[in-house]
Image (tube, rainbow, N blue to C red; front, side, top):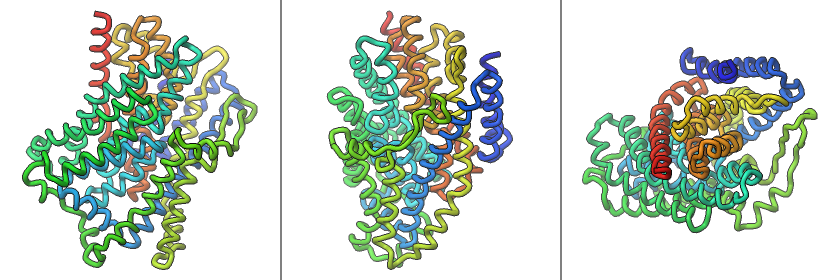
Length: 532
């Protein structure tokens, strides 16, 4: 009964979206009503429910500002017809669309995830994929799939350092040792999983372009080597430095190595030079645009500024981030509850995106209709805002559903699963992490919710603690690919309605389940080896 009650809001949400194909707004609003009824029935105070919903409003507002800034940047670049120059930059490296997929996924997405996180990698990758000739819906799917494995370390290691480390610290006599072991285990297992991710990405791209299996199989060697160019340096960073830089170093290595190999045609199929075709509208634009390098520099300058600001503010070895975070506003007790909300406005990714959007408008101010672009961007985010609003309100009420005598709804689900799975918990553990990320939309939050439970189960069942926490973190990274607010934000950037969410979630379920099943099998095998 407890399990059914805890799962009911999620079942309502998933059923309405995937089975009845209702909009996210309607589905999330209905799920919100159901979870509010359930938590009040369980004895959660009204003030706590109001505080959780208010926190959801704040988080949704911050995310929509990030999306708004990204859309303004994209509209400015598109208004000047500069996407053709971005396309040319990739075409100069290789004409093969499969190479483009790996460059964006293992270069741009990895690096941006390492310095920023918070959904920004997909928001940047989606317009890149579209400019390179992929259909908008497939561009969203590819961007979300790509932003999975790098999320296990996330922005400067937050999912590990904060999501796991802060939970383990009061539980263990050696929290730093456990965090270090978790980092190394994640990076080590990711070497194999990144190979699988590369194959999934290439197979997805080939399926979208021409459906020929031959164009997939011939590219397997290059895809495998590209994955190693990312995952091996990331492992070295985790082993020698810690959890802060694996995604950053892996992304930089991916861009350099994959770009060099593709440009030199090392390891690529013989027909790679003719493999890619850009979208008709971009090719049409290119006829009227000079191919001067200055135009290319202008095209990428707003995004170059974005990367620069993210690096300067996010890397822990630079003082700027700490200074910006010192200016914070919020409340540690919303509506007198124990639910906090605070934001450092100068440090927020939303502020950085808005600064870059203003920069883009400024450098092109004489060549664009600024009022029209801002109006179009405001119109584009109106419906997604309400979708995000109800999704995040639902998420926060679901998470903050603990009472004085009862655990929160997500913890109840995990506890019952652990009781029924027994010795197979190492297989189930990553699925719990994925569930947390799907609901919360954040691997870090999933780790905060479930790391304590994973720790307790490992102790009571005599599983390796670091391994269970690693499986939790990696599972959470894969749940990220179907997290509703990530899906809505990416669809908005692609110019698509949130009504397409069911297609993205359905499409991404298969690769997500493949990765989770493999990860679960690795967990079982590793447990068997450790205790053999």
